Image (cartoon, rainbow, N blue to C red; front, side, top):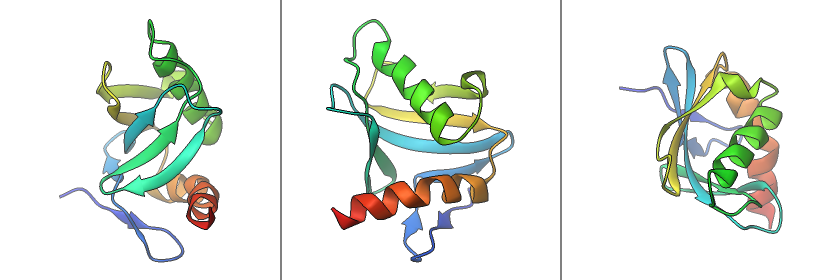
Length: 115
């Protein structure tokens, strides 16, 4: 069973799962958003807003770039494992631990809960 983590407020982060190479992040992508950012957790997925349209892989490219910036890693360390052509995606973040992922996401999640 994959290990699930909680943030500092003890809310489940069911969208994060340990993987032998790092962490898997389950996402629901909203393309054509006004700006890139994270939304609330929706069950087992984290909502992520991407400014690019879902045309010719533009949204996926923007998604990978945004996640690489958020997690301070190379874009080549990220892989869309499932959902290449869907809004529901599973992204592998290689070399990122559950604790690092939690710390990087906490400010975004706290901000989205406050709005």
